[in-house]
Image (cartoon, rainbow, N blue to C red):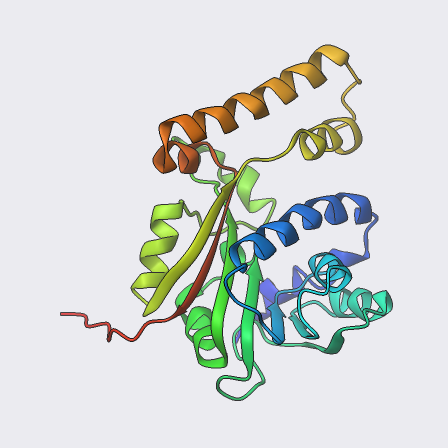
Length: 253
């Protein structure tokens, strides 16, 4: 169970006014989920750590699955999700952060988007996801860079207590008996970068800045395509992976 201090920190997280910001980011997160799940057709989907339902909004709008459920640790998030009136949403409830209140193999797919970096005991949660669903799609920010340890206050301000690279996430999932089916590296789009600068950070608008942001985005994408997957993952801001239960038994020692 999630400790009380950790859970209390998120209770009022979704009562502020950052709706436009969360919706903008959610649009791209939802698209990444759709992209890696092209090879499956889930009928029953559960989002764990669904926040205020921003991602669910787009998945519902795009008819990603006919039946969607959601779990969230914050009462404020559950309230926001219910207020959306999503036609495909069948159930939303608060949970303790680890124990998923559904029987084994209840869902075709579980979504865990930008949650794992916040989780104290990620292997415990991953084992619960594996118990309840045939497939799992996970997206994490690619926070890990050189000297990341010197930016502790910055990442803790976002609640990011874990750091991942595509390689380290694949290792974690594989070592828990999960087989990778599809994955995707993504770079923050100019739309998101400029919104953050102009709206969140109150930076003065500038045509030069906009051209610079767009050029950097285009350059990174070109380099990733030319230099292959390793470079693509190195330049990425987020990594999305679809996994399923492996037939191979994991042995330690």
